[in-house]
Image 1 (cartoon, rainbow, N blue to C red):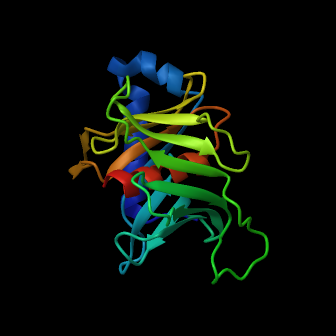
Image 2 (cartoon, rainbow, N blue to C red):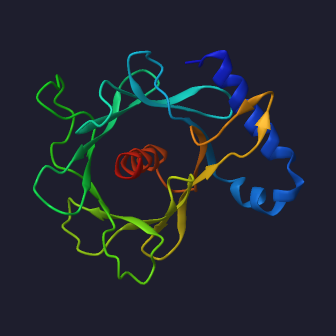
Length: 218
């Protein structure tokens, strides 16, 4: 599915800039084997708030359409509108804000039987002010297996669109990077940014983490 001309032009401009940016040559060599997605913090539907995610060719990859500003449930869809992952806020009374990640679509309105009701991961906001690393934003736990140790941690600043997702061995598996450039009169700001997914990490799950961060820190 092709996206609107504005986003397509924007995505290609970003892609071309990265290919020719000699100052970031070393970084680009690392990112070359990665998947770079352009994330626009805006829904394609006028009446909704959400996200539009496109690849370097200007093709729609993921979309999110929310009818309320702070929903208790966020559904990540693919280009065809099929639910990929569902994010649900933890409703129990707790000081720690958490979001559960479910596969497919869940909820009473779900018409299919293909989705899993049990969450696969849980994203929990870091509330420990005495933590040795104050840059940690959130921890991601494997909820289905009941592991007490985190599977991933997210550090950096979502407000400034500068984050890294690291696995339990401190390997970077995904990154959020802000675009400071101004191409063709289009200023990116913080509403348009890059999601860089490293080899072996699921792009849909990486985008789900973006959605969780947006709810936790926006």
